[in-house]
Image (cartoon, rainbow, N blue to C red; front, top):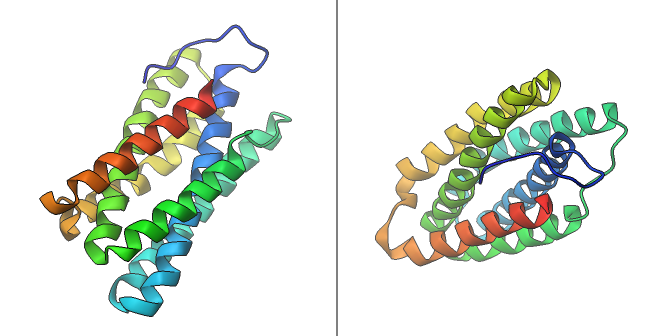
Amino acid sequence: MQYSDTDDRLDTPKKILKVNHAGEFGAINIYKSQIMIGRMFNRDYVPVLEQFLEDEKRHLQIFWREIQRRDGVRCKSYWLCGLGGWFLGAVSALFGRRGVMACTLAVESVVTEHLKSQLRYLRSKEDKEAYAAVESILCDEQNHRDFGAREDGTSVLYAPLRFAISAFTEATIRFGMR
């Protein structure tokens, strides 16, 4: 997705921050539901998910501080992202470790591409604060994505799950940016 200026009352950097904040809430809920199900069926990957959850909570706060600095409010899709995240996390966890890793790979692949595109846009607008907020989380999201790939998230059996999760993630971001 290419980010550009809009004609409506909310400027694009504010939209980016709000959508990213909502997305972090969705990611928190993905990991919470995966941890809950993992504790019942497959405890071996729960510690990694708990670390990812802490990263996402920190990201949520980074975006919230910048939104508040701009006198903003939450994205309209905030609760939808949370509910969708909970659902994606639960469904993927029911597929076991590979399902969880496929979900992580799918979500974080879409997210990292959006973050890179956002950074190009924010650099062109010379919005240093928004740029710093987005840049501060990119490495974590890339690490999550790469971990999912290394831990068998690329299994061909899970290609349909990855496709569905990627499509849902992309659609949610586009919906939030409208």
